[in-house]
Length: 122
Image 1: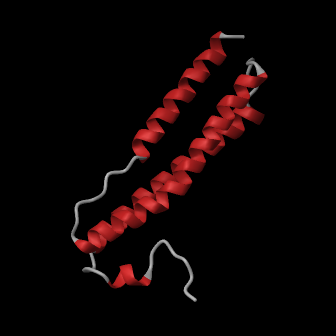
Image 2 (image 1 turned 180 degrees about the horizontal axis):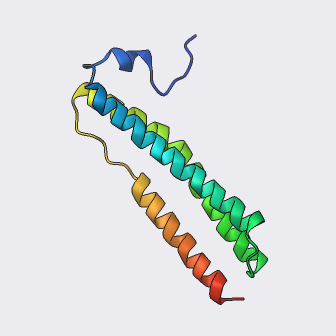
């Protein structure tokens, strides 16, 4: 019985080995998304527990949960994107579009609106 894997052995044998520079660039992009996720978690912890904000408790909770939810989405989607890009490079196909930048932008915009509300709505 085979074990489930995002990067199956069949995919590794398919196509041609891409230039190592592209593989390393793909890995750096993956790691950048993981760093973004970690920064969002740090922001959530700061809002919820460290920074003494004069906000309503509900708003602090909303901002903290929104940052955490965005971090979870990025953490789940980043390896999926990495595998899709790696596979496309192996097969000589165009790189797939990623929803991750749009999701991150919308999520951060929502958090910014909540932060503005927190500063002016007490």
